[in-house]
Length: 239
Image 1 (cartoon, helix red, strand yellow):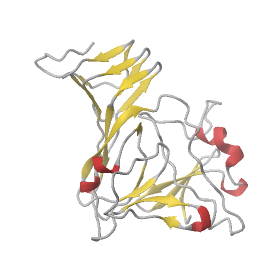
Image 2 (cartoon, rainbow, N blue to C red):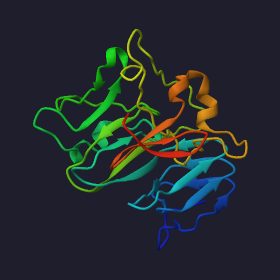
Image 3 (cartoon, helix red, strand yellow):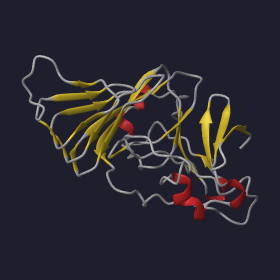
Image 4 (cartoon, rainbow, N blue to C red):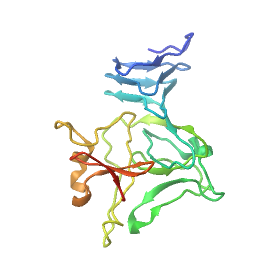
């Protein structure tokens, strides 16, 4: 139990912190620092402030094996213009209003866009006049900020297997142009990308939905897309 009346708010500052049930009382606060990790083997109840931090080098991690109640804020480090990121909300219930003031804009649209696959529409940049917009867990969004900042994603944990994200492959069309979908990690911890010693992983779980010649994860980096497949890591790729 994290009480509300303490001299110093507790922080998770090791990589292997564990507990059974975790209760954060009203007015109480708990922070997982960048590069550190907490696993809750029981249930989480957050009635206070629960934040996870990241920086340019690493990100904090939270795993809850039981049920989760209440909000968690994941502060995602993002560098400034001209860097682009493809981000996804690690919680359920995050909205554009939580960070729209950080986004670069041209006076009409934000540098913030989901990818629209049907008819190869591409990146759909958000109008600045857009009212409150809810982020879809698992959906990837191209994002560019005005200055370096931590984007706060606040909401409840996605503590179940996420099967609700609909991805599409419009036909007919050249496979180099159609079928691409921008997705992201919907959880507050890393997920295994490829098969390692037979462990459950993203590629094997979704292999039947991927085009045979493109059965990989294409991760955006500063110098282009990096390709991860079950053979290994292949560096840059033009797509």
